[in-house]
Length: 122
Image (tube, rainbow, N blue to C red; front, top):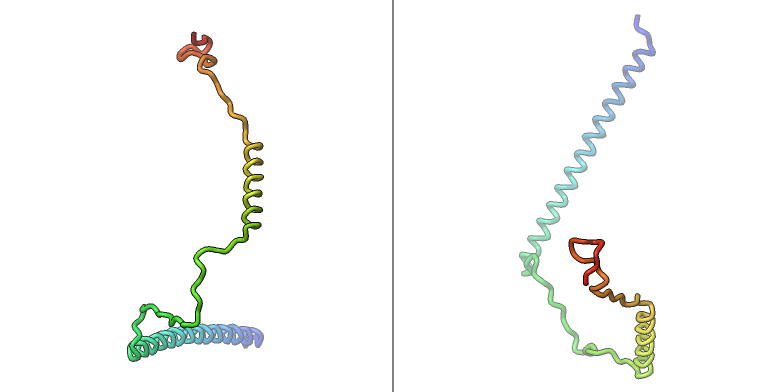
């Protein structure tokens, strides 16, 4: 005679496998249905654009309202602001010149002669 726990374990294992297979098939079917709906939607959109005269990829031309004012070409800056900017630029240039490393000059006479590092050129 078979042990009842073994039979129950076998049925539980088989039930788990069946549920897993059913879930896999269900997810695969949902994925396929999603792809089909997306393709159908794209087909309908393409047909709609073809029927109503707008080609795919054609740029849209915005309508310009006559009430709109043209944009200014150059920004309007007050003279006080321009003077303040000029003073700030001058201070920045002075700081950059003060922070710059001093120029180093080396005379050719101080360098050793070519080929003889211990002898100086005359």
